[in-house]
Amino acid sequence: MTNMSKNDGTAASPQLGLMARWAIGFTGWAERWYPDSFVFAALAVIVVAVADLALGAKPMEVAASFGGGFWTMIPFTMQMTIVVISGYVVATSAPVSRFVDTIAGIPKTARGAIAFVAFMSMAASFLNYALSLIFGGLLVLALARRTDLKMDYRAATGAAYLGLGATWALGLNSSAAQLQANAASLPKAISDITGVIPFSQTIGLWQSMLMALIIVIVSVAISYFSAPTGGQVRTAVDMGIDLSRPVETRKAVLRPGEWLEQSPLISVVIALLGIGFLWSEFATKDPLTAISNLNTYNLLFLIIGLLLHWRLRNFLAAVAKAVPSTGGILIQFPLYGAAAALLTGVKGGDGVTISHHLANFFVNIASADSFPVVIGIYSAILGFLVPSGGGKWIVEAPYVMQAAKDLHTHLGWAVEVYNAAEALPNLINPFWMLPLLGIVGLKARDVVGFTFTQFVFHVPVVLFLLWLLAKTLPV
Image 1 (cartoon, rainbow, N blue to C red):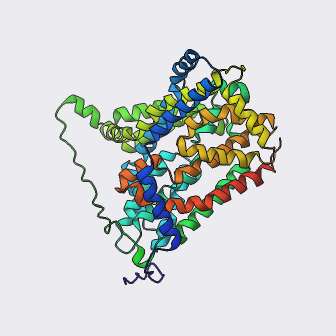
Image 2 (cartoon, rainbow, N blue to C red):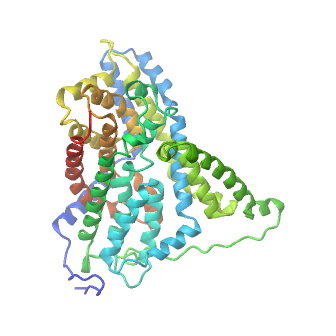
């Protein structure tokens, strides 16, 4: 039996506990049977189209609605693509990398290091979920390089994913809250029901912030106590991970065009223009109103990334590395737009759309008191099939918000019900893990067991909070 280092502070265990074995078994099953997330997006379109036909809609009307809705989300698709790219660019800049190395020296024990990763990942997710993934991955690598810690690399990576699996949708880049706060991006099918809902009535509610705080505390505690110890630990070296740092070389400047790429002059001028615009926005508007505009939010992060990388060549190289992470958004969001159009724009033989049928269903089975739990469970289940906060909100919002309106529940809290529940399936769906896994060099099967452990605890906690805090809100 391998002895634990002094830093771990616990006795070695001969084998994995029951919950860990169960989680790892589930991971193996999911890796074998779970298809690509695009399959689920395509299936959602097919299911809704078939339902329209079953309700008596004409085939050509269904086809016309599909084509008409396919490109309706292009502005929002581009905005969410820039969210991912800007987060990656900021996280991979040299100053942020040095900062990561510095804070990696804070934890004193292996378990403490994993809990620290969880906290930092979730803290970053309140600003930018892509930043959370990249920052968390870099922090895991930095901690893994410490020779004085015998840290489980899998558990640390699972902790780095908690920003996406626990808190991101309660922060500034919540897709649903951003969409509801932006009149220009809000589809008519939703705006006709809800109108614009500002941040102050969604993520800015004290109930939402309290829920986020409780989720962070619970998640950090689970990360600490579920971390393997003793002989159960598998370090980065045990898993064959190359922890060496890439060596950067600077090419000699031979042509005028290359001088422009290497000079910070263009970066500074562009940044000054952007800063002037941002100053005007924040000086003339309420800060929450200003930051709720996705265009302003994205420009802020792009300007920060441009300044942190300093030279255009470095900035463009970071953008190029970030682009592959956006493929799922670019190809799947049009399908979500088509699904939303099929839900809300096609009338059956009775002259009623699917969204109205669903709204009536929720009104019939839910009361104002049970609405948060019913919709929370539904949103979490649908999240397994459609792993996209923004795309799924486009699909759900027309009938969910109609039901909330009919039941006279707080519309802003209905958005937060969606936000909190939507994050739950991310804990066991590998779609959003891909950027993180690319950094740390692991596969989803190595990590999902630990995030599934979080999932088991999160479900009852989140649903209870959604129900309890709803009672403190005005109708």
